[in-house]
Structures are given as structure tokens and as C-alpha cells.
Amino acid sequence: MPSVTHDDAPPLADLLPWSVAPPRLGRGWPAGPDAASLKARWDALMKAEGPDREALFQPTRSRTPHSAVGQLPGRSGGTERLARAGGPCPDPVRVLYAPFDEQWLIPDHRLIDAARPELWRVADEHQVFAVETPAPEGPVLLATSLLPLLRPGRVRPLYRRPGGEEPNLAPGLLAHLAARLGLSPTPLDLLAWTVTAVRPGLTVPLTEDPELWAHGVELGHRTLWLMRRDGDRPRLPGGRRPYVRAPLPSRPLTLRYDREEETLHLDEGRVSPVPPEAWDFAVGGVRVLEQWFATRTAPAEPGTLAAIRPTAWPQAWTSELLELITVLALLAELRPRREEFTVTAPITARELRTAGVLPVPDAARRPASVLDHHEEGPEGQFALL
Image (cartoon, rainbow, N blue to C red):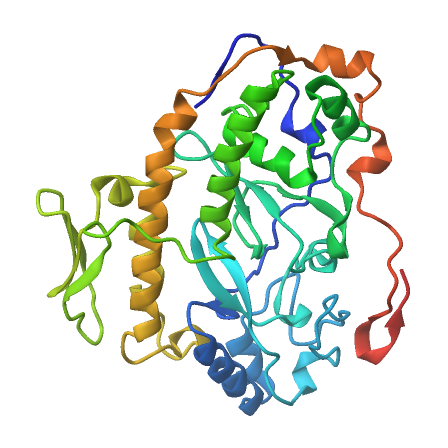
């Protein structure tokens, strides 16, 4: 982790003040690594009736097939009570299901215990979500352009409104940094600095040194690009790119890593080279590659909707695995630079209080309250914000 020459670094919670608890599904079957399986699960639910539909749904105190809920913001899912609903499955959307694990979700409010509509309202191609992760091992802050389902850390959107409008930053912070640095930092620059400089206690030392700032921002933008994966696809140099050396079986059940040969074994299938740093990459004490594989191969209870899944390993999963190995390897290469990063010429929390940037007004910790569209409430009625 980056070091700092002082202890008065402002908290992340003051720099990006509006935060939301992550969505809570309440049942696993509306999400998964294969979109076609989600549509098949929905169809199976719609074909079931009465008690059978309720059992397949897996009701909780927050959601049953009889719950009356509004539409998810920006989505086309129905609002009729699920007990008597029909029709096609809403198109699954891409989400960040676990650290570095992009999966799919049926975007229907009736299926989700706590959907956090305030996050859906601001989720678009301009948004970046900063997600706190459980320490101590691995990055304490992740970033994604997708709706994050990771628990238990808070989600901090970079923007409070759709279209990249109204940065979720302490009012006056960018202007103060601009005056001290002689630069014009953008909201994304500040987030890039944050992923470089953030410390395990979720404090973020700032600097008035423009050269150090530029260095931290450059390193952070590289990190954001790898975490978000929404631009050019990352590649390792020739000779270090992972390839499938022996075909993966139709349904691999075991995962093993050979550190000496830098080879990942999926039963008799082989992928290499896989750097040890990629295999060891962990978040919250859990190896990312092991968790990714387990999510796709763990047995499901027969007769449940979760048991509807691909009968064979899809080629798309192999492509995703190769890209994930690449991302983790490139992030691991950046880790020494982050660990050696030392913040000097600090802008302290005391200075921000003196300048009136802190404390943050209460309104900045709440979501934007007025949007320019209607949202459909339960049973097709419109809900006004």
C-alpha cells in the first residue's frame, strides 16, 4: 500500500460522500455467468403455477411472488405481481458479481430483495462505481462500469446523476485541488488518484505536488482501465500471453495450478503461461481465479432454477478466463509501483476544513432527488420522484 508522511489524510467517505449499500439479491438464480441460462430459468418459472412457482422462486421476507414493487429505473421489467405474471424474460444485463467476475442478471425488481434503485438510476455508460472491499489482502477499492453486486463494502458512484452529471465529490474539492496544483483535474482524475493512494483504512492522502499528482493519476488511470475493461482489450506481451495448450473438457470439475510450469489445469485441460502473481491475486483473502471457477462449476440443488445451466463448458467462458488471467497479471505488475508510491507535500484534512471543503454538507451524502423521467410503480402505476 502507498505510504504517506502524515496521518491527517481525509477519509474516502468525505471525498466521495454519497454511498449506497450494494444490492442484495436474496436468491442466487436471477444471476449467473450465462445469459441464456437465465432466460431458461425465467421460462421455467413462468411455466410453473401456484405452489410450484412459489417454491421455484425461493421467497424471503423481502420478496415473494405476491410482492408489489415498482419497475427498476431504466429497465423494462414488468410490475404485475409475479404470482400471476407471464411474458418473456427481461434482457439480462452485465453486472460485477464478484471481484473481477463479470456475470449476468435478470433486471427485474420483483426478483431482487434489495435492488438499490438509486444505483440503477445513475448506472450508464458514463458512470464509474468505486466499490469498497474487505481487507486485508488485495486492493481495498475496486472500480467498475457495471452495476456491482459485491458485498459487503459500500458502493460510491463517481457521478450523482446520469450522463456523467454532478460529480459525487465534496463540494469545492476539485477547485481547491486546481488552485493548489495549478492543474485542472477531472472527476475521473481524482478517482484515478484515489485508487493509487487509498490506504487500508480507506483514507486518501492528497498532494499539492503537481508532478507527484500526475504520476499518481497516470498509475490510477492504468489501474482503472484494467479494472473496468470497457475499452481496448488488455494484452500481455508476446510469449507471455495465456493460451489453451490442451483442450478443456466439456465440463471441468477440478482446478489446479502448477507453479513451476506456470500452468492452470482444468481437469485434463491446460492453460499457460499463467504467472504466479495472477494465480495468487486475491481480494478479501480469496483467490480471484479459484472463486471465478467455483462459481461456474459448483453443484446446484436438483430441481431448482439454479440447476438450469449450460450442459457443457461454453467457449465464451474460456475467452473470459484468458482475459481474466491477463488482467490479474497486469494488475500484479502495477502493485510494486503502488506499494512504493509515497505521498509528500500533503493536502491535509485540516487544510480542507480551513478552506471550507470539509465538513461535507448533509445533502452531498444523499442521492440526487430530482430526475427528468417517470418510473413505473407496482401494477403499472407511475411513481413520481
